[in-house]
Length: 217
Length: 217
Image (cartoon, rainbow over all chains, first blue to last red; front, side, top):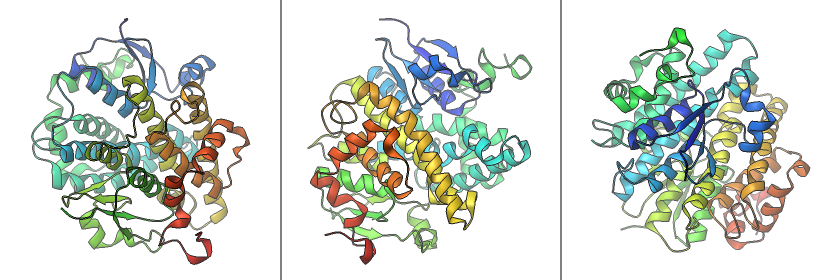
């Protein structure tokens, strides 16, 4: 048994949501930053570890490696059952996973760096426009879905895994200057979440690999 | 209690994988085809039901609605535990979810119709090229990951949810004429799966909304 390791990047929203889960569960881990801008994920060494060459990746206390944020978080839920990330009801649990996947499948991949480069090359304005449009389109559906299941948080009145996904994708929305006035439910829930210590400590601006000029204390 | 309903489209690979899960579990359901080419998912009626305006969506036997293929499949696993779609071991279960999400997050969304239209408009050749490149890039990572966990099937020697995702994304790869010679593991597993009745009955060419000229019996 060893201390688990998280391979991640401060600004990657998929790494961010796993950091919230680790903070929520109170799991100690070693962080190995992978700088996506310096293409550290493209090295042969990292490919051997993570064939998809994506972050995050997580090495369990038994030394086994996993990638994909939600797979890692579901593993954490089963391996560390304290402070559950799911509600008990079968349907409510499914709703949590649905919200996670609206974000992880419908929104996040379309505005990911790899796609931005394929679509816009080095044209930063075009990249920003594509990302902003992608998130805005996705948030319309997400806002509509949250109308049916949210109360204080994404699904009912308890914090769940869905809230970890929400906080990190709103981070991307802010970065790309999405007009959030269309999305009052997403905004309200995110405002509540951003006051909580687990969410604050996991955000990009509190990570050791965050550049000095963006860093918060 | 009523018969569950699946809203789907014969050629949607996300609908396809849910159909395999329903066949695997032997669950009877009513099919409501949503023709994505005729934009039936964009109607106000469908938006009220599924705010993200995507297929598939599933109405449970209690009349509750869910979208997102993997959320639906995880719900089915919990509501209908016979013929499990996951192995028992904690880490192996996580590996299954990882494979599912490599397909559902890294590959599928990037080659989805909505993105193809944004990238290529009505230029069918450009659409095909984008889709082919996206799947080829994604399959490199998937093939590498399968090297570590596959035996007869994606994870070990039992059929799991990961195989349902694999079969449906290979369907897309064939449609877009991806050169599969680079991906011997994916090809071998898919060839095995495609002989099984649950996989055959769920494929696009056996659906009532499949156009006559593509239909198989």
